[in-house]
Image (cartoon, rainbow, N blue to C red; front, side):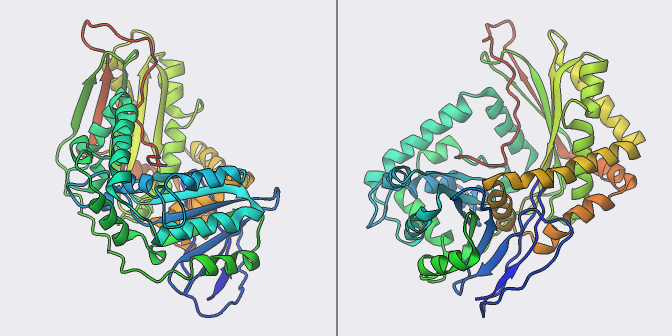
Amino acid sequence: MKIRKISALFARTSVAVAMMAAVMMVLVPQLSQAAVFNPQTATLDNGMQVVLVENHRAPVVTQMVWYKVGSADETPGVSGIAHFLEHLMFKGTKDIAPGDFSKIVARNGGNDNAFTSWDYTGYFQNIARDRLDLVMKMEADRMTNLQLSDDVVLPERDVIIEERRSRIDNNPGALLGEQMRAALYMAHPYGRSIIGWLNEMETLSTQDALDFYHKWYAPNNAILVVAGDITMDELLPMAQKYYGAIPRGDVATRHRVKEPTQHAPRKVTLRDPRVGQASMSRYYLAPSYNSEDAADAAPLELLSEIIGSGTTSRFYKALVVDQSLASSVGTSYNPVAVDLATFGLYAVPRGDVDLADVEKAVDEQIAKVVDDGVTQDELDRAKQKLLDSAVFARDSLSAGARVLGQSLAVGLTVDQVESWPDRISAVTVDQVNEAAKRVFNDKQSVTGWLMPPKGGPVTRSGPSIPFENDGGVH
């Protein structure tokens, strides 16, 4: 196997580390201008990637295994199976009884969890350095030896159905966000609910779970990322012992439907008695680092920072401070995806301000961005904020593992990681303004209104903002 030491970068939205072919165990250092995590990478003979982020501040480590499969890779008709299998991965093997995985981790002073998104599924443990061998053995065991039967699968199906009810059906903002995303993507599976549509979840079977497991879960479709108090000389033999012993799998190829040309804006209105304060939000189709128009990704990161990030942003000063129409406003954009990304914005009216007036004010601010553009001063300040975030990221033990794992799982490269500060620094005002004109295309948008019922009783809870969680569903 071959090892290579590289330097990586981190921003609010992550970029990645690349795959290395394996033949010999040779360490090749490479310098970079803006190192944050300084990961070392290797590839086992069975195709599994190994990434290490050394952090010797405390005798603890984070182990993460990322599978390059998520809800967007599900076969139509079995939505939710990726998330369901995530739950079932805790249901035992020949050597570990159902439910014992997390109990063993806890008895050894650690904690663990898992998550599912559209493009990936991840499992992690935070544990003392001298217990890494134990959790790695267990993680490798369930990668290939999961045992499922109706006795454990069907009760867990009730669990995920209840999870949907509590996290989606009982949350008006989450319901609206789900409906908006389904409207935004007319054909692409990013419009599918990660947790699944209820009518399909109710029919998920043991065989469905086993089919998905055997189709996608294999070392050559997985990435091991470890961060913490360990060196590559210590980690690699351990990884080879447990993960390297697992044969390569015949992993399926991702087949994603291309989103067709969109010709009209859409609007979704949800009225619910649980809504105490109305709000509006909007999603636009946007490029990712992997899409054909990836050159717009860095300018759009800066655009989001300029117009909608925090109390000094343009939208906040206009709608909250100057016009007193909104109590809060913001934007979101994460270009780390296999296919398309979403540029989002939201606004919450102040007091009894009409939602239509807030939306009109948002539209006016968007028009100003499109017509007049951003300024050089705004761009310079946004650049500094993003570049500063790379410095602060190294303070977190798990940040490196999450950034690198997510980025590798969607297929980003070492060059994209290492060139990120240069790419951000090189963005011009003209590039931001041109990207803004392209992304703020009403024909590729959906607007959502979240409102109390007409004349009906409402709760006194605050606004629910239907914004996406990049971490996916746990």
